[in-house]
Length: 465
Image (tube, one colour):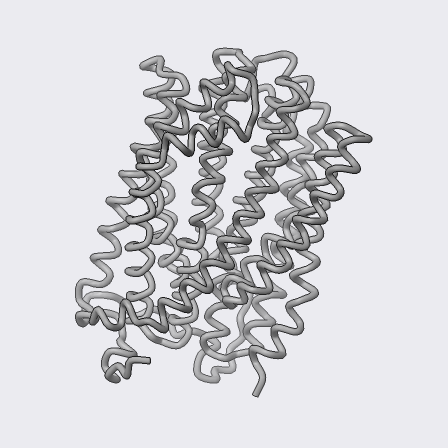
């Protein structure tokens, strides 16, 4: 390990910045973490996150105006393939957030800076590689989905256009991870609102006003990613401008890079399995017919809404758990887990109740195709309950990322994925689409309960005297 100077290890905020309130559990303080601190992180993140599924709803509504189930299915298939590819790089968000949160808990400002610089570098290079590989990715997506030719054609167009903005999208992952790791949810909220607001406006403009359809939806999203990247890089440069110059040895320290690769590889495997489960769900839907495929694609928006609504408390859990680990404060860690779990359950219950109450109206707003509407309404209860069955997995996953317990998180995901595949073969064969939805609920429940059971052992190891 490189022996850095004392001045390079611990640096306060640069001149011109207001010092953040002292971490309540840092340095042996007796003040207790409470709900106000959780909500201060969760609410801005929730407000930012809730606009993301709204973007998906707008995309679906723009295509749904045509009233063609084939185009709805093509957009859904293209979005799934794109999400699977980009989820591979989710570590740029999750890994950066966990490392930054722990550095923040220790008061190590330069390690926060080094962590985000490493992530931005990896993001830029990875994004350029994805641009070069876009034809192969599109072909692989078409082969794996095995959908009807008309659906495949629409999907191919969407994927190729969206991948043009891959470098910008991945850099946004790294920037957001840095901000959430520090608990700077206000700035993160502004950037997410910018991204999603521009996305909605340009999607409607290109897709409806200019009549671009799926092509317009893809270009609107790509342009929004670039706009958000420019704004995010401005924030990062502004935050670091007055700090002492960090040495390349610190940024690219071999030990730090090894830890980053280890953490990121585990998160990547976990993310690939998570997206694999989602991809299998969509692919099996396609085998049940175009109407069922389109209906499930519409209903998956309810799962995404639940994910993003609960994401605020997951972000709070990730940040507060990471800070507690960095500060070596077991009491604060346990308090953070309890508070975020309690709030997560309450919000999940409300989300499910709202989905039951207005779900049919949402379905009718998304699509005009009568066959898709009837199918979606039939299976709506399954989608409405995903918030309750999934809240624990979302929250515990965030705790493990904040604590950087990546290996355990990976192993539990492997067990959950195998259980999901096993139940899928049994239940779908007997109950069709009902069995497909039931299997996905099994996947969410096993993952959450599995992480909870492992956490007790990890706490004993992490906070051992």
